[in-house]
Length: 562
Ligand SMILES: *[C@@H]1O[C@H](CO)[C@@H](O)[C@H](O)[C@H]1NC(C)=O
Ligand SMILES: *[C@@H]1O[C@H](CO)[C@@H](O)[C@H](O)[C@H]1NC(C)=O
Ligand SMILES: *[C@@H]1O[C@H](CO)[C@@H](O)[C@H](O)[C@H]1NC(C)=O
Ligand SMILES: *[C@@H]1O[C@H](CO)[C@@H](O)[C@H](O)[C@H]1NC(C)=O
Ligand SMILES: *[C@@H]1O[C@H](CO)[C@@H](O)[C@H](O)[C@H]1NC(C)=O
Ligand SMILES: *[C@@H]1O[C@H](CO)[C@@H](O)[C@H](O)[C@H]1NC(C)=O
Ligand SMILES: *[C@@H]1O[C@H](CO)[C@@H](O)[C@H](O)[C@H]1NC(C)=O
Ligand SMILES: *[C@@H]1O[C@H](CO)[C@@H](O)[C@H](O)[C@H]1NC(C)=O
Ligand SMILES: *[C@@H]1O[C@H](CO)[C@@H](O)[C@H](O)[C@H]1NC(C)=O
Ligand SMILES: *[C@@H]1O[C@H](CO)[C@@H](O)[C@H](O)[C@H]1NC(C)=O
Ligand SMILES: *[C@@H]1O[C@H](CO)[C@@H](O)[C@H](O)[C@H]1NC(C)=O
Ligand SMILES: *[C@@H]1O[C@H](CO)[C@@H](O)[C@H](O)[C@H]1NC(C)=O
Ligand SMILES: [Cu+2]
Image (tube, rainbow, N blue to C red):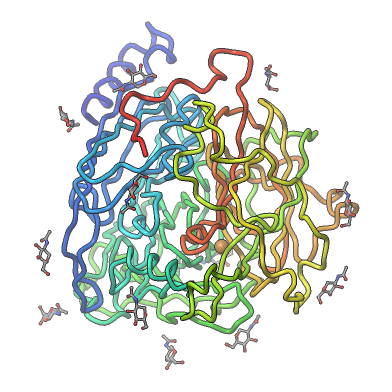
C-alpha cells in the first residue's frame, strides 16, 4: 500500500494550490505481519527464531506524518505475541499500544489482531517490537516517519538513507533464556554476539562473510536512521574517520550536534547525518558496549561492525577501525547525553504533580524455597520499592470495564523510606522491595514532573527508562542523590531535549516533565528486557478529559481476550 501513499502524496503535490494541505495529507498505510519461525545461522550456530514475514530484522515500515497505519498481525508462531509501536504516542488509540497485560492480552498462536492508529506530530525514526518476554530479540523493525505533505526536514535533504538496527544474538532459544531465569531466580544468560542489521560483523566467529556493507558514493550526505533494539546493552557508536551530526532522537528534532561518538540505549533511536568526505576506502561502523555498573565486567569485549564502503574502494582492502571509548567511560556517556537540545520546545513551566521515584534492582526471597539454585532469592527491579507484578488481564481492559481486583490506584509519589540512595554499601534491609500491581492516577491535562533516582542496591546502573504514550522533556540530570532545594535551579526550562527513553545516569538522577494529555494506561519500564521481565515496571493511568477526543474509545472488536 506504499503505492497508495505515494499516489496520494503525488496527488496532493499536484493539487496543492487547489486544496488545503490538511485535506490532502492523511493516507492509509496497510501492512500484514505474519509471525512465524525461521532457522537462522549466526556465530557458527543455527537457531529457530521467531520472525515477522520471515525477515530478521523485520520489515521497515515507512509512513508520512499524519498517516493512518493499519497492521494486521497473524500469529502463526508458537508463542503468545503482542507488538508495540515504540515511541508512537497513540493519541485516541490506547488499545493499539501493545505491551502485554497492560493494554492488551496476548495474541495467542493461531489468532489475529489488527493494530490501527494514526501517527500525528512526530517525525523521524521510531521502531516496532514484540512486547512480551524476550521475543523482541528477533521480532523488531524500523518505523520511518517522513514529514507529511508540504513539510520538509529542518535540514537539507540527504542524498540517501541508511537504516541501522543494533541488536543482540543468543546461541539459544531466547524464550528459554528468560523463562529459565524467571524459574531459577538467576540472572538471564548474556547474549553471544552484538549485531548491526542482524549481522555480528568481522570480529565474531563465522561472521565475516556476511558483514553488512553500506555502499556509499563520495561527496554525498546520508541520513543514518539508527535504532537500538538490543536487549540489555547500551552502546557507544562510531564510524572510523567520520563525524556525525545528530538531528533527531526518538523522532524529535534536536539542534544539530556534531560528534565522533554516540551513546545509544536500548529503546532509543537517532537520526544522524554523515558526509562522505574522506578518501575512497572502507571504514568500520561499530558499537562498543557501555557497562555503567562499577563491576568491571566488559561483557563481550568485541565490537559489532559493519562497513562503510566508498564506491571505487577495493572490496578486499582492510577497513579502518574507529577508536572506541573504554567500556566503562561514563564521562563520555554523560557528555553525549547532556549535549542535545530540542529544536522546538514548549516545556511546561509549572508542575501539578511532583513525583520522586527510586529505580533500581533488588532481591526477594522466593516463596516456598522455590529457587534453591539461586540461594533462595531472586533478582528483581522496582520503582519506589514496588516490583511490578503482571496481572492476569490487561490493566486497560480492567479499567475500561470496571473490573475490580486487577490493580490498585495507590502507587506512591515518594519512596516509602528515605535513605542514602547512592551510598556504596546500602544496608541489606533496603534490598527487598514490595510486590504489587499499583498504578499512579493522573488527571487529564495535568503537568507531571518525575525525578528518577537510581539506587545502588545490588549495583549502580544506567537503566534506560521508557515511557509509553508520551514524549517527555529531560529538564535536568546529575550524579548522586537529587537535591530538591538546589537542583531545580539548574533545570533547563528553555530548550531541553524531548525523548521517550532516558538512560538515567548511573548512581544519579534525572528529572522529566510531561503533560498527561493522553487518556489511557501507559507503561513505564526499564528497557533492559531482563529487568522489565523481573518487575522493573510501573503504570500511569490517565483519566478522560472533557472533549470526545479525550475519552478512551471502546476496544476494537478483535481485541484479544485472556
Ligand atoms: C493483508 O491480508 C489481507 C487478508 O487477510 C488481504 O486482503 C490484504 O490484501 C493484505 N494486505 C496487504 C497490504 O498485503
Ligand atoms: C528448522 O530446523 C529444524 C531442525 O533443526 C526443522 O525441524 C524445522 O522444520 C526447520 N524450520 C524451518 C522453519 O525451516
Ligand atoms: C481504524 O480506526 C478508525 C478510527 O477509529 C476507524 O474509522 C477505521 O474503520 C479503523 N480501520 C480498521 C481497518 O479497523
Ligand atoms: C545458560 O547458561 C548456562 C551455563 O552456561 C547453560 O547451562 C544453560 O543451558 C543456558 N541456558 C540457556 C537457556 O541457554
Ligand atoms: C566464507 O567464505 C569462504 C569463501 O567463499 C568459504 O570458504 C568459507 O567457508 C565461508 N565461511 C563461512 C563461515 O561461511
Ligand atoms: C570532526 O570534528 C572535529 C571537531 O569539529 C574536527 O576537529 C575533526 O577534524 C573532524 N573530523 C573529521 C574526520 O572530519
Ligand atoms: C577481550 O578480552 C580478552 C581477555 O581479556 C583479551 O584476550 C582480548 O584481547 C580482548 N579482545 C579485544 C577485542 O579487546
Ligand atoms: C575502566 O576499567 C579499567 C579496567 O578494566 C580501569 O583501569 C579504569 O580505571 C576504569 N575506568 C573508570 C573510569 O572507571
Ligand atoms: C551518600 O553516600 C555517598 C557515597 O558514600 C556520600 O558521598 C554522600 O555524602 C552520602 N550522602 C548523604 C546525604 O549522607
Ligand atoms: C489542556 O491543555 C491545553 C494546553 O494547555 C489547553 O489548550 C486545553 O484547553 C486544556 N484542556 C483542558 C480540558 O483543560
Ligand atoms: C525534599 O527532600 C527532603 C530530603 O530528602 C525531604 O525530606 C523533603 O520532603 C523533600 N521535599 C519535597 C517538597 O519533596
Ligand atoms: C498465552 O496467553 C494466555 C492469555 O493470557 C494465557 O492464558 C496463556 O497461558 C499464555 N500462554 C503461554 C504459553 O504463556
Ligand atoms: Cu534496568
